[in-house]
Length: 437
Image 1 (cartoon, rainbow, N blue to C red):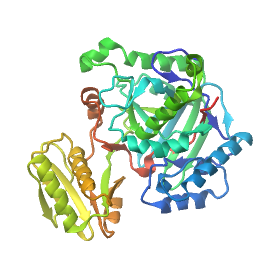
Image 2: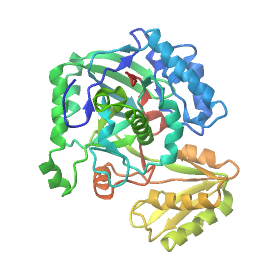
Image 3: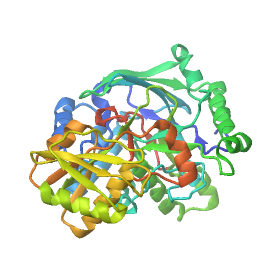
Image 4: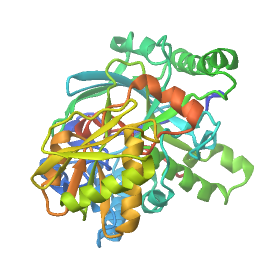
């Protein structure tokens, strides 16, 4: 085990053997396409009977369905079958260097495990690992039902580091040709292409740990951010999945001695870290669609709520508009065959997403039968908003440079503020790791 003070475990990842069709093995993050179950049906049709991570996850499109307990039981059974049959094989200690191309962008990441004892998702946290958005505690129990008792974990979590001089990940990419290739495959249903290399040389591993430690140097951090505790790892995608891993660990931890806690595998969660300065990382907005409320009546109700919250809000029908932030927030909308934009001239929140989310939350309290979904892609918003009793809203993209300063100074962003790419650009499940002794 590599000793370090940055909350990193050098994991023993598990992958299927050579000869596996990785284009069928790798499946996109379970929290995508939640309003489009047909996507998951297409994935199953493509996979057929081949080994796949789709057997090991529960797409959130089916979360809360009547057959959810049966689905979770099948997942547990498949995990055991894959372990027993050697479909999942454990590698020695090491990182996985990942190069992913999708939607015209190419980005690089490093798969490792993070110490859940170094993480606190509460606003105002000063831990090395922090949430970037408000964590909805009520979203944890359904996910905990899936993770609790599972023998292995699969990560779709992307964690960002602020490494402007590219000292952690990029030196490994420069020597990728000398590393062992673990997989090199296209990804299903428009997911692009991905290559993974094994990083097991002790010098390379120690180089990563040393570079991460340098990013937490108190003197250099305070020069940039003032008198604030260093932030090393900021959640990029999968905040609630990481919070679920934390909740699962806290349950297990309560049953262990201190010696057992120190070495239990569930203390750590497998993630992919990426450098926020990677030119291939693009922050996409996460739009909103409200179901169970729509038409002019729904829009006018939302505008009244925004007026009460911000002192002003106006609506214009029949005019296309671009979503914008700044001092004035412009939020385009679609409902049925109507469209237009809501303008808030003196918003209380810094970001347009905060203005919209605050109003939607209040509206949902008044209309408990309505619900909101978080959507990647303006075209999907328009399509879903054509349904009866639905209304969709477009939001502007957040600048990457705003992320770390906002988390350091303000604690967290409004939930679902940004996405690292649209749905088919999300992390695909590939690596697994044992989380039971």
